[in-house]
Length: 524
Image (cartoon, rainbow, N blue to C red; front, side, top):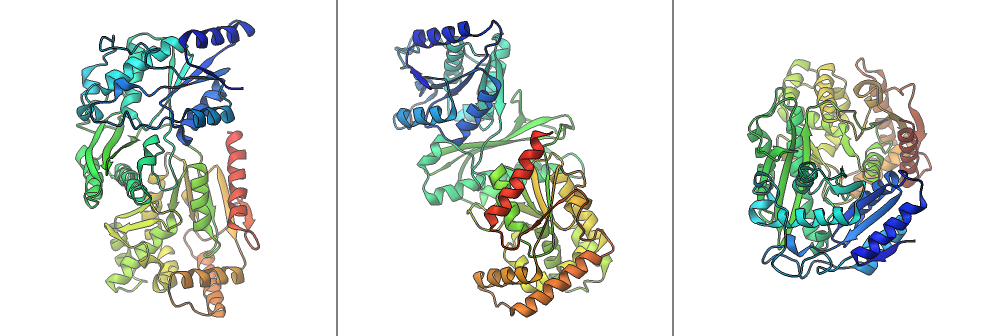
């Protein structure tokens, strides 16, 4: 049962009592500092703390020291009753919700903790003077009050996390600071208490902030040599420059630990690409980490199968469900096919096709609008709809069968997925692209079932749909081409789980794959 404390003395008495109940040395306390208005991002911190500690304390304190003049201190959401219910459901042991007076903030004469100027005078610190000094002061007080073994912070506030880690190290505080991954909505928008200020239209727009980071990340990993910082920054800046409703405050590339600006990217560098922007009156921040350092990768899910088996829809939902990156490899081959068709060359001329494929820049991004297809950019042009046209569909197998094309695209796919944490779908992901994927699924359905699905999709898109007999014949012919091509033919990997989707709902198929993934992760 969750208990609420509003005074330091009562919280300390509770924690001391719990420690006395346990054998010496077997009690650990995890602290999750928050300002309330709890959301799924906070819950991920609580869940992590719950698994690593005997007791979990969540602090809820809207810190006046970290708000500047004209900021949203007065209107910042205060929802203690709702937060209490969330904490109780999540298994939190204690909530500490003190007043400002209880935290020693009753006048202008407050002893404050001042982090290194080079860490607070950049990024958010430029426009929020005194913000991180206020954060450091209250976090230090909370660590002193609770005296936890571990304290949990989200990586979305990357500058804050780096400053707190430095603070704890410099002040020799006996606590482990645990940085946890950013939790995102299906569109990619990072969860934040301030998201409630956004209208539905603003939320769609806000998701482009993360998309700009993803474009820059692709550039980082696709560079044949190490990129220059300006190459990475220009990708994100140019993307957001097309969206004037997003008022960018800064886009910067810094060392993830020291926050020093990056002047040269090395193979050992661990960098943070950070953004702050406003949509209307709402200020949003986000970041991603970029590093070529080899680290144990996250699990990969490879979903293979014939055309029309529902791979794309299922893969997107699995990715959203598990918080993984969705990579639509079929869209990449369709993009090459479209480019070749536009040039009007013979699709059988492999030298010319290879030349075109070599010079293409293909980028894939989650659509900010939920339920819509992944956004596909071909040399910067949005071709999301055009690559689904019947002429492209009829010719993509001929392009995908060419070894030079597959070699070019497979290399790109492997670069994007090298750190893991991705769901890929295609024809040969489990057998050729990622033969060491932790979870492999071969998704299939009868030709008749796939013809009906294709017919419904075309009608829904407002296109002229052939009759079912013609569609079924086309699908069977596509299957024949894919399974008999010389290079990386469509075959089921020996260790892939067969899932026939005839008669199954999308939700049932997704649940099957999610269960496979979770069972595999538990055994890693």
